Length: 113
Ligand code: FES
Image 1: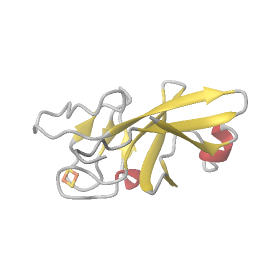
Image 2: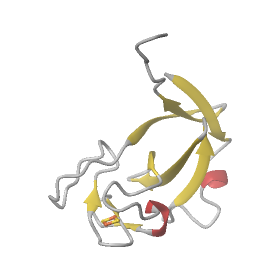
Image 3: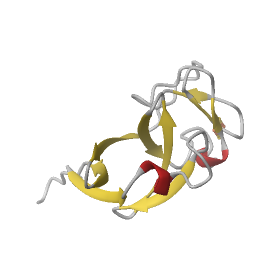
C-alpha cells in the first residue's frame, strides 16, 4: 500500500463545510472524499453503475453515499451497495495523523513483476 498525503487537515479537504463531498487526485486516481460520522472516508469518484461523479451526490442520514444519477446507495466504510442493486464502489483507506491526512492505494500486483 502506498500512502499519499492529500491534505493538512479536514478543513482543507472540505472548504465548503464537512457535510459536503469533495473530489481530489491522488496517485493518479480521482477520488471522492466525505466526512462520515466525524471520520474522513474515500471512494472512487465514478459510480460503478453508469459512471456518474459521486462527488455530485450526497450523504444520506446513515452516512451512505448516494449517487446523483440513479440514487443507488453505497457504504463509505466498505463500498457495499446498500440499496441492493449488486454493485460495488471501490473505497480507500484513510489515515488521519497530526502531520496530515493520508490516502492509501494498493499497488497492482502484476504477474510479470
Ligand atoms: S450511475 Fe450511479 S446509480 Fe446509476
